[in-house]
Length: 80
Image 1: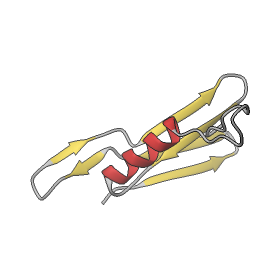
Image 2: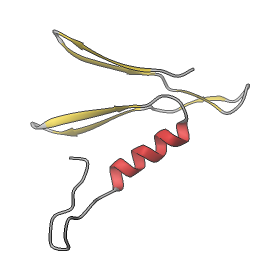
Image 3: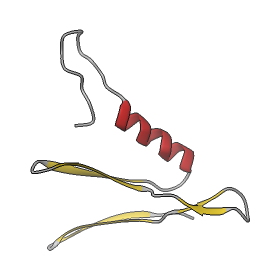
Image 4: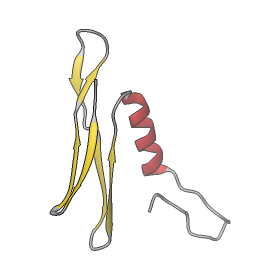
């Protein structure tokens, strides 16, 4: 079982996620499942994932790479 949790406290925010992955009964590894996207002096976003590692990696890749365009001359729209 994998987990992730975010807690809002008076002192700030706490983000936790495990790093356990498994591919069968006896193949247990670790992989970072918390990614921080930050624009200094502006904002930050934290992506926490749990469950299937391939889905988590696919979503992370899409968020980091994907860009949408409203028109040919418009600036691309990203996760920001």
